[in-house]
Figure: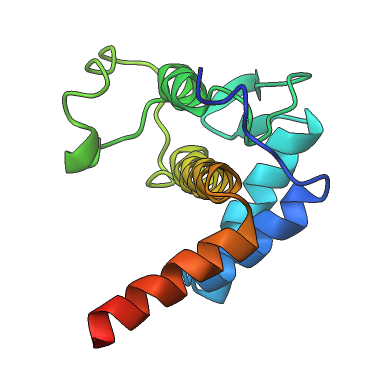
Length: 155
């Protein structure tokens, strides 16, 4: 599985905050909302909602090495969104009729987990790049290959 070799920084929450602020360029308000929910997921505190009793994902700390697709589906099943965003149609089964709904337009879990998914993909891509550099003989060899390619292109 791709997650097996994923190297998650020890201080991943700080790294995640930098990622969503710089790489994803979230607004201050959006970053604050995402971090609030992700910290609760990471600590194992879980998520609560006025719309439903109980705690989603309580005592199950989440990290970038977690199966985030399954987590997103579990969150949707636990508290379906009032209206499903177009990009999720077909990805999740229709919500059961009746019952509580996430009236926060995805801020309960969908947005925070989707940002974690993007961070997970970033870490996965970073690991692939590191592996490619190592296979090429390390950073010095990679730099030499880039310099040689630039020289060839200039000739």
